[in-house]
Length: 243
Image 1 (cartoon, rainbow, N blue to C red):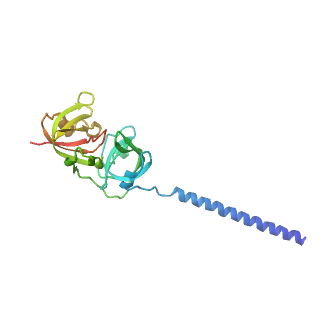
Image 2: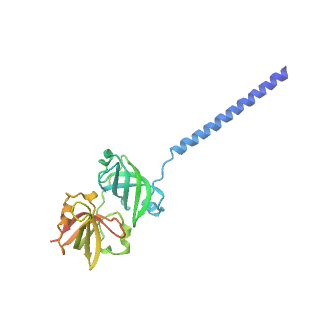
Image 3: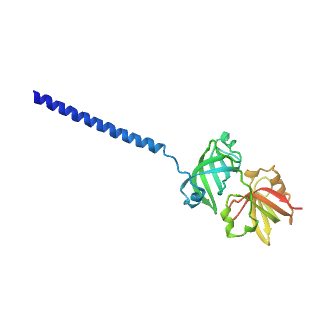
């Protein structure tokens, strides 16, 4: 009888140890799961973003500079930080949040790095506001001396300016006012393509009207975002006719 009781005691202790071991293992797995779910997403520097391969998912922090009109729960943003510019295409966004994307606002964007006819962008993205962050509004860089150079592409999507260009011609996307305007300007005998993007400027803005009234031979200074479409194709935001 004593042997039987002793054996039962030993078996009970073994079972208890096994139960404890199982409990500790389950706890360990649970802890790992929590740590994985709260792991922070890596925010890339601008240099790391440039180095990332097309097609990969990237997360960056940047500042809103302008936007195309909100439509169907998405928006297109022109963004910039002190390090460089970004074009964010088809960003998921409510109409309420779109109204908060004012110039200078800092946001964190996650999406797919893409390239379309030379334009490097982030597409199909989501975003969040960076609470308590500072603001940043870019000043246009004068790149007149870089027109036609290989170095111009290094300023893609930044706010830039070009001075002393001569107006040659305009062409409306659908043949008449109300849509994009394709503008040809010349410098030192060479033609350069610009665009007044209607979703960026609208048709009732000073810049849209001013471009439509240009005359051949007018000398102008232009400011805009250095978009890229089969070569440099800045989206004009302001234009001044020199007297």
